[in-house]
Image 1: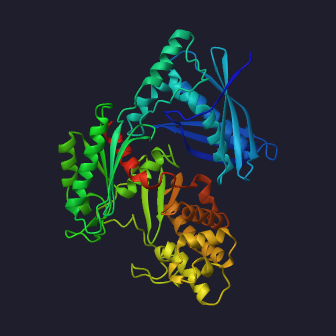
Image 2 (image 1 turned 180 degrees about the vertical axis):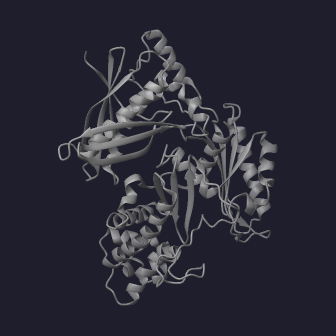
Image 3 (image 1 turned 90 degrees about the horizontal axis):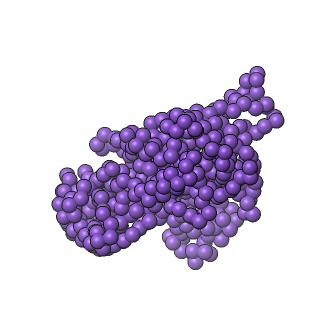
Length: 515
C-alpha cells in the first residue's frame, strides 16, 4: 500500500531525550537511547557491526525502538501503532551547517504515514540523529490516542503540561479503526486548551517594567511597558508594575479566561531610588511578599513569583532555544557571569544567600583579582570586561589592529560588541582576545556542566552576536580539551527570546504553577 507523507512539526506531550550511550563489545556496537515523558522512561537498543554502520544511525534506530516501547506501554487500544525507521542520512546546508534527517513510518490498522524530520548537528551526531527521529514522530505521537491521555501522566509529576498542536493543511493522521471516531478524537485533541493559559507575565527590574499576556505557544496577546526613570523608588516601580498588569488584564479579560500572574523580580532600588542598592534578586530584595499580595488582590488571580534570571531560563525551555529540555543551565555573560539552573523543569531550589546566581570559582591563581577578593576567578577572567581588557592591553602595547580606527581612536569607547565584530572581520588582536576569553569561559563552563549535569546550556548576552561568539569560542576550547566528553550529553545553545524573555518566562511559570 503506498504511504502518504507529511512534514514533521512540534507537538505536545513531548518525548524528551534523556540519554544516548554506546558500547563497543565483541558482538559489535550497542547503542542505548533513553526517552522521557513525565516520570516515565522508555529505552531502546540497537546493535550494529563496527565500521559498517555509524553510531548515530544506530542511535536513531534505538530512539524509534524507545518510541515503540512508549506506545506499547501507554496505549490502551488492543492494536498498538507501529513505528519504523526507514532512513537516516547526514547532509550539509549551503552555509556549511551539518544536519541529519530521519524518515519514520507509522502504521495504524494497515494505514501508513511517512514522517520527515531533521535536526542541525551542534556537537553530538548521535543525539542529533535521535532529535531528528523525534522531530519526525512528535506530530503523530502528540495527536495519537495512545499519547493524548499522557497529559495526566506527565502532569502528575509537575512536568510541563500537554500543549495541543495547531492543525495545518495536509495533515492525515488516523488514530483508530473507525474513521469517524478517529476524526472526532483528533478534533477534540486539537481543540483542547492546555491548562494554565493564557497567563500574565510581569517582569520587574529597577530599570524597566513589562507586562504581557501569553498563550500556550509563547505568543504575546497583549503587552504593556513602563519606564520607571533613573530615580524611581521601589514603591513607584511596583505601582507601575501593577498598572501595566491591570492594562493587559483589562484588554484581554473580555476575550480570554486569564488563569494566573507570574511576577519576575530582579535587583531592587533603595528607598530613595537612584540605582540598585540591594544586590539580592527575587522576593527577598523587594521586601517580603507585598508585591505578590498586591497583584493577587488587584486582579483576583493567583500570583507566582520567580527571579528574573530564572524566568528567562524558564522561558527558554518553554518557548525558546531549549524548548522541552527539562534540565538546562542558563548562563548570561556581561560585566558579571550570571547563572540560573532549571532541574526537572523547575528552578533549582537553593538556600537563602546562595551565590549560585553569580558563581565565583578560581580557575587560574595567576589571574587578575576579582571583586570577590580572589585572584583568577571565573568572573574576572571570562566576563565582557575581560574581553575588552585583553584587546586594549594589546592595543596599548603597540599591536597592529583595526579596532582603534573603528573606535575613532577613542579606546574608552571600545565595547565587547566591537571586539566581536572586528574578530569576525579577521582582526588578529580581536580574534586573540575572543579566543582567550572563550578558553577561560570554557573552563568555568566545564565546571558548571560537571556540577549540574544539564542536557543543554543556553548562553545569553545583551548582544546576541556576543553570546554566539562566546559560545563558538567556548565550544571550540572544550572540544579540544581533556573534558570534551562533557559535550556528549549536553548541547550548547544561544538564547532566542531577547528582552521579552523574562515576561514570557514569568507567564509560563505562573501557568505551570496554576495548573
